[in-house]
Image: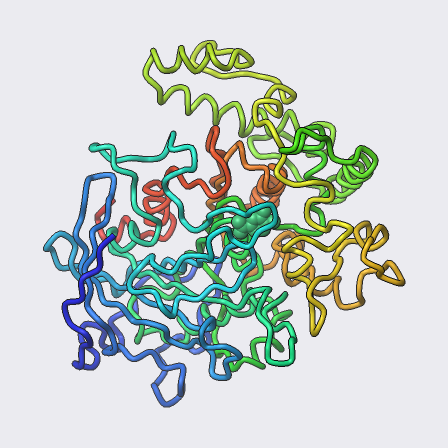
Length: 541
Ligand code: DHB
């Protein structure tokens, strides 16, 4: 990726983004309109007024499905999105607005807005030093347990196979870059994360800081309707892994009043924080139920060391999952019927794993397919369809990444334990089971009193379970079949829950792909055009 500054700073105030230019037709669907609707004055917005003239003009080359494209765009850097920030390094965002694509002028004033976070491992995420669109990555390793991932919109999968490429075989650029090349506005928010401590050693980035920050960023964009380019009623959130979890949470919890006091404390803008649509890659979410779901899914898989996880712990957790799944009362997609711990393997096979393998195999040349099938005799290929058993699929995936319990271990060693830290306490248990079996000297062996409310603030399943009216109505969910960072059930439950509410869900698994894969980014960009109605309005895509 190359960024070339053409002008350091444009001093012509308001160029191309005159107030009113972004007022477009099409009422909000699902998402509530920003209070007041009309543009607000800079005076009303105070320090949160977006300055339309304060940009740098940059160009970048984007590798799209149709080859390389040169995009000239305006770049607003490190805009603090709350009036009373705790840490401006994290509570700021970047805005990128395309003005010329391959030499043709574009007007993004009513384009969808891709709100792409780069959060990984629930770690702090800053865009303040990014020198252009898509440059603010997560800390390598994600700070996640077991080495984490390299989340962010990785388009080149770890294995190097199966990624979406263009006709010259080049790996496609990230979601953010493809979005500007499609004429969309890209907003990249930073957010506080779990490891941040102040001078006294107090933790100020643990739950719910990260979601509060993302909501404040959305409110900033909405409050600046008519000043910031793009359609503020068509904000599409995107993120991977912990960032995927936050993207899903942002979508599920839109305009929930539960966050009001936190947002007020930061001086967040007075506007709706609902987002129109969600893109979530391998979301590490539903944390308080993830240990059970993990054992149900990967309980029999060996650890990388070759050893098995503790059988008693694994089986106890797995039976907790059965109770949880029954309480959810979800129905599977595709008319599958009620989901439970006994039929979920069949559901995953039918709805996701076999179709995933089928798509993969269909995409191979006859010779490559034959070779793949010879290497993987557990797959039956008949009439252009792959079939296999659940046991064989799990064996094919191989080792499990995490020991049991995967998320709330007895020794408080996970990133998630830190995410639920508070005050001077780095890490805390957030499940009854973890606390009861604590090995760190926790005296009462109970979760702290504030944990249940924090869990609700961090879990999209809670908000979907309540049918939150401010939620997103469009969901794009993606996950690699080899990803053992969490259970496959987690994404599938998210999809089933949203779908059960009547929302539009596009969920599939990438065959043989690991954590952080994004092998169909161009499809995501086209999906945004479709669900936002931009395809019709612009006559493109
Ligand atoms: C991430 C990965 C994990 O395994 C986890 O538990 C939390 C976050 C990540 O890559 O963001």
